[in-house]
Image 1: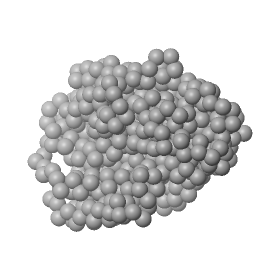
Image 2 (image 1 turned 120 degrees about the vertical axis):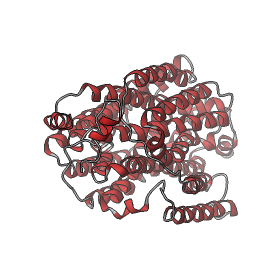
Image 3 (image 1 turned 180 degrees about the vertical axis):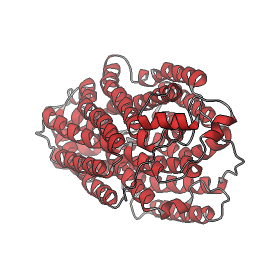
Length: 530
């Protein structure tokens, strides 16, 4: 049966067991992408209603931080308890976080609820990639991961427009409640149709490695977000957090060299393919989330679009991402080559960010759309492919932890990107607003937790302000967002350089295990074939 299944995979045939598993993964991808894209255009409205203007980026960062904490141990736990139970646990935790977010009475409760949501995503994202890595050969995996990226893009097309519509005509709270029925459907499909063999082995959880890594990353993120806003960069609080982060991360590396089963084996970093792929993944994540969360601020606050229209402005990027995600996946599967696809994606993203960096107070929707399309074309070719590159370079034994490490890189990149870009925006507003507003008006806007401060992000409030104040806010916001978009260029340049150093190796044409088959016989039949 092993030979038949392997030949079927090599010929590109469709295995019903694989497709049943893949259906569950596609639904998981759907709820994860809806969570991200539904909320993005509503962020200005949420901040305007609940307050927390100075802490704007904490709403997405809290989810990314939780994901960062969970991702390193998700793969290891799935080796002990099985991929399927852990995947279902992630769906349940995500649904719980969605319900709490919809019921949030204030800003910081919403931040906590988003943290719960992020914990659920911390299971879903790496496990979906690990399951694909288990049941599909690297040569065939390109088109499946292309379809996974396309499902993300397809849901994302509906997400921004639907998120803007729901926020404008109903309430932003329904953006979270709508996740719950999708989560319930995902649970049913996974429970009845996802049969993923898992070779259980005795494991030891790297508790100290997980704790030091989570606390170290958290300390660095807190310092980055608070620096220059809540506390001065040279204050003891910021210096202390960075110092604590450095000590914790050094301790993490020390524990990893002594752990029986490290949460992030340091030997993986000896591979140039693994190292450079993860560096590039960090850059892609930083810029992707920077686009998704800060572009609606520009479109609403500078151009003056409604919430619905600001959500729709992301659609061209996501349509372009679908096209190149499917196309690049098919190309990689047919040719077995991936490096030129990745380089082309990085060049396109750099070109797109160069267009974003030219936006100003006089920019139009058409200029934004062109930039979005170019960025989307680049994202579609790169977002899933770096995971494929890493999976192709490791053994079955390291598959889950290597996949989790790649997802960890994305989560860290997204969180650090939002923190850094959010800090640039916050400090930019502090220096830009006084240039365009009457004396005292800028200070009032920046010190108010609600009310007039929300006008910076809320077009409906801008419309009720005196024209001189409204135009001053728009000019200041345009000036403050310029360095945010400009910062994407060096980040992506580093990602491109890292991609150039990735050594291209042939893609394997055999899978590690067979999907849809129960029992140890199936598990053993598809054990390590490399």
